[in-house]
Image 1 (tube, rainbow, N blue to C red):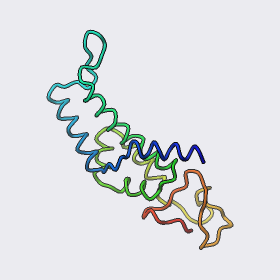
Image 2 (cartoon, rainbow, N blue to C red; image 1 turned 180 degrees about the horizontal axis):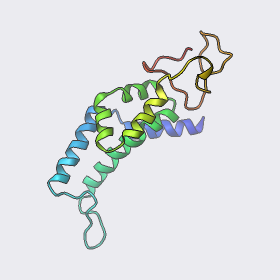
Image 3 (cartoon, rainbow, N blue to C red; image 1 turned 90 degrees about the vertical axis):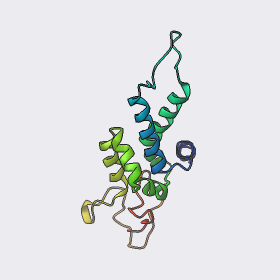
Length: 150
């Protein structure tokens, strides 16, 4: 339970009510700055970052896009995860930074892919059609964020 709370804190830290549109806007702004010659990782003669604010913005944006789906999964915040992963702007931001395969992996976590004997292992074969899946690490909630019944 304490591990779950840690992931919830991480999800809240990196999520901070961020939307896909905001993340996409940040990625585009960082790209514009890079095209204009601003180097996020530029350092002065003392080895310190020239623009620490730009470095921090880059760090938070990239980490939010890369790790927020994982943190939400580990925190079992599936409704928020599905909302994030079905946000077209978030998908575009993820693709713009070269995280296409990670996006596919994230979507695989929430999409019910099979039924019958090939069902994912986290679904118990003994569950009736009305029972709720409870306390299963990494279990998806379904595409609409509400599918907790089989």
